[in-house]
Length: 298
Length: 331
Image (cartoon, rainbow over all chains, first blue to last red; front, side, top):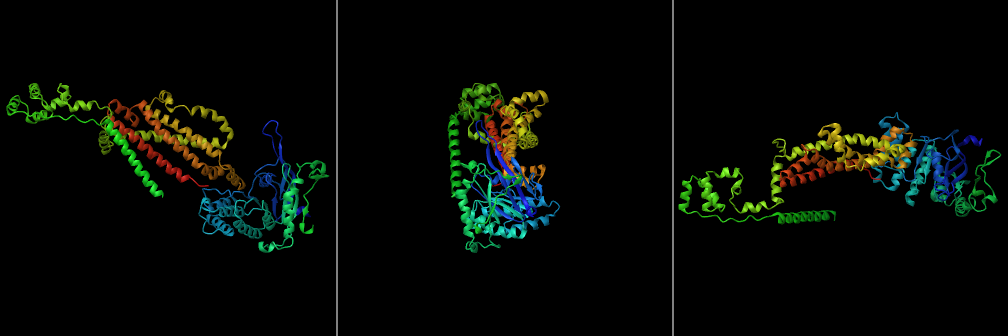
């Protein structure tokens, strides 16, 4: 039953960067990464730098290839980028010679080549307004603030109405205030469009506020997804009320505890990892998924 | 603040120019020796009139300081002043007039002479008095024409080729050795080859411009195309853009500033090279003009032509600078 609702599943993903010098060993960034995402689910991925989060996102997007393992999306293996997978990059990645509107239109026209100019324009404006941009459509990215640029990037990703939305630390470069506002807008749009989201973040509070489930990655090399933390807080969520929810700090403490100590202990490359337990990723031919953990029930 | 700085800079520029002109002036100015005119007595005037010398000629000789004996000698030759000037002046006949002899020692032209030449040339830049006497405007026109044709041909070859080289790293690796060998060859070295193959001096100088313009554009275009930000290419990939569409909608605008900078470098090199090429090829054109004026020792004209080359070069650079600005973007 559960298998049918799986929209995305990764099977034994591994990324190895071969040695560049003699005497060097190959670098296995992550290994045996299994996880699944259900349709319409908002998931985030947390882990220390260098554990390969961005690489996993790029593999999901089809922009990078795994050394071994596959990604299944909607029953088909992912092989290369497509309009089904919209990406919001870390540094907005707007084309600097195009206006905000043209940047979004570039994406919309690719999605709907048969649309008239007017249809494209209206569609773009709808999404630019959804992310809270008004009257700045004709400005170039260099004339926009960091927050506005990131909003245009999000509008571009949403405007193609893809099944999957991938976001690589989309708010990393923003100040806390702007970040909070855009997070709320993001949630509002997501609730309307019901897209499936996979997002990378470093921010624990951001992850709790946005996610249904949070994937925790151990440290690299040989990183893996250790568990999926279930955020059992009802939607629509309100930031000011949410912090008073009884579960909030349980989840937060669980995440911080993981990042501070367990991410290292559980790492495939940590001392004594082999003696303790060798994580194989499979058992009797079946994939072992990281356990869903609900800190409210611990 | 910026306005004030600009004003100070302008004042300083003018000051430097003034200093330079003063230096030029003092280095080349030669005071004309003052000549005391000779007073002729009524008796002497009568004798000269009798010898058939006109009154105006006689007064001119006297003003130039010739003695009565000398004037009488000239009168006995039976020549008018006009005849003497035609034949090379009084000096040619052995009569020293002081001032003229002093002036002949001055090698480099005085700024005023260059100014006069400039005024003369600019008041009628397109005059045409035979193959070796054409106005600066005609000379510049021919040079600009050669540079224009050679440069545009180079654009037509270098930009598409550079684009393809930039798109395919394998091709880049395969062709780079040849480009690196050909690039440092002075374009003038191709001139004999071009003359031998094409057998036409006009086409040969255009070919030289073509060759020297190609390299900066080729290398800049390839570099610009190869170094388009990966993020921008990824955007095109996720939007399922075809290779061709990506090339025109993402790579070309992204690389445009680098490509135009290459064009700017090429054009300034082409303008440097055309002068040298025309000196060698001859015929017509601003390079040949400078050389021809040197051969005729018209130094004032030569200096004016050199300045004109500089001004035209500046204008070319400003023009293409505007194009660069048009395609520039801020990240």
